[in-house]
Amino acid sequence: MAYEETGRDRSAEPSSGVPAAVLENVFDDPTHGEPGRDRVGVHVFWEILLLVGLAVLGWLLWRADPAALRGAGLRTLLVGAVGLGLLALAAGLSLRTAAPNLAVGPIAVAAALHYAEQGDQGLRDSVGPAIAVAALGGLALALAVVVLHVPGWAASLAGAAGVVVYIERRSAPVLVQGDYDPGRSAGYLFAGFAAVAVLGGLFGAIRAIRRLVGRYRPVTDPARRRGVVAAVVTAVALIGSTVLAALAGVLLAANGPGPVAPTSGLDWTVLAIGVALLGGTSAFGRRGGVFGTLLAVGLVAVFQAYARARGWTVDTWTVGGVALGVGLLVTRLVETFGRPRPGSTDRPEPVGDGTISTGWTVPLSQPVDNWPPTLPTPAAPQQVDPWRDPRWEDSPRRWDADDR
Image (cartoon, rainbow, N blue to C red; front, side, top):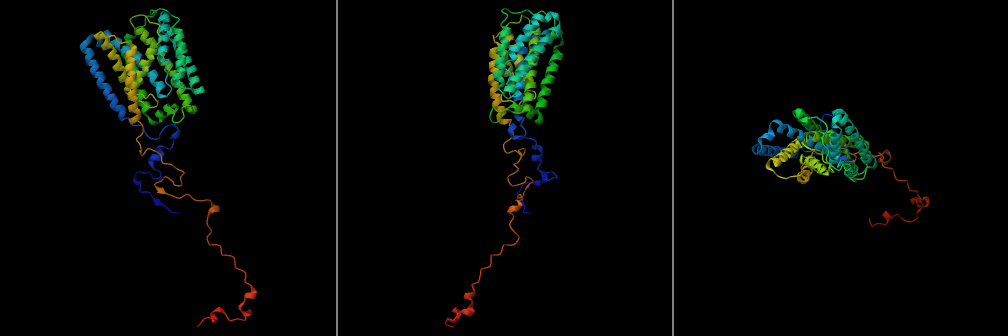
């Protein structure tokens, strides 16, 4: 068998003769995205910019209103950041699975109205039913998305319309009846949110988990089904998204100084998705940073407090629109500089084209029927005409007729 040297450096290959790149990508399915490890440098760069922006805004808020960063003002700011953070986590969780949930805002408003009306029955009796209904609604949304295989934004928008109908049954703001004060545990709530956000980002940075969570992201025809695993992961993400949105609504209602207004909540959807994108989560799904959501939530929360301290009239639509616009630019950066490097060694080599990817080119054996015989087949002997035998000739032979 003939071997042909390909010129590759075989010193980095394992003793089995198979390159490490092939072993690392042996379970990569090309139908679930390009093989290779996503680059995280763009996330590190963007999160450093978010940290710098948060530090600058914090310093400006301290100069404008020092009371907002200490005592009761700080506790209110932390609880508001946790409420916004839960909404951002809900939006980011659905975005990472490529099934954005546009109903998170209306769900939060509906949960806030329910808690405002039933808060006097106790935290467990008022919040428990809201969480249960949100989970059932998330399950219905998940079944519609994964069974019919329709875009998450379209199905969730239909669900949001149904939630808005529930909200519009109230014509006036509702006073909060409960006495739960989340400010007494503001530090613990913020620490818990920060831990969930960072740990989620760390787990999402692991290659296997990132590819698992992003399996619903289309890579060819968006209408093609992505398989059972992708459907299950997406369904769990949508259910978790609705539950987080309901918890955010309860927390914002308990932290607010006034009554809960029966609004559509779509402005909160825009803000939640804008913050998630601003933190580095891709609008296409799969890709995201580690500290981005935490830093983006802190940046927006501190900006809102700074705007109030300066007397600016900045509503949720404005902040959410700006965050969404900047977040779309961040998505373009993440998709451009976060995908596996072109021509990287992590890309698996093709197998089945007549060579074996071991660093040596080996011609594949041919079928036995096509093997050439060992010796050539001799030609069939020609029949000799006896009447052409020289002894029957009466004329001289040709060589006798030559002039010799």
